[in-house]
Image 1 (tube, rainbow, N blue to C red):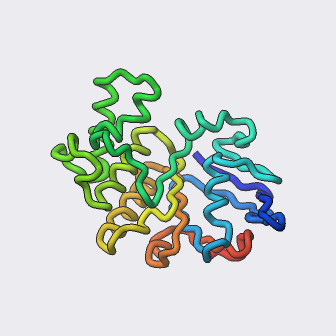
Image 2 (cartoon, rainbow, N blue to C red):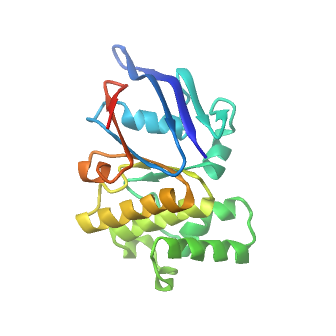
Length: 222
């Protein structure tokens, strides 16, 4: 499943002026690759990620997800079925166990419990967590373990587009490497489209394609 940006711009009104956070960005993201989007704070990369996730609509242009503009998607459904977002702060439910957190998108879709548990356990194994984690609460996990659970939840959702907003920002070097390797496997072995917004150049170096944003524009790629 691919995602295309076609002359995408986004503006918002500040207190004293209108700010053009994203300016006429066009790019095609292909299946089976890991992309890193780098740039200084305020360059527009997080806004661009939000547009790709359907959290906002472009002021101009189109974001095309699986052949359809986000303007035409039911965007809540799009985030349930086509696009998953992984955040720096993990966004796990603190009172749900690991397996319940992973299973959550399946529960929303009314998947039968036995089937949902089977899928959740399989996805937990994909991110290299053992059965001993199933009943643990997020507070009893390290940052790296919590991020693995967040990725497993995205996998359970069945999304083929994974958007990661500073996914390693709270992690040490070893856990950062583990998370990036998991994301690379999802792209290279499962054919997912993985897009990582990051300040970490060590993370960017491991991507297949590096894109740089500056002042809302995609100014170069390496």
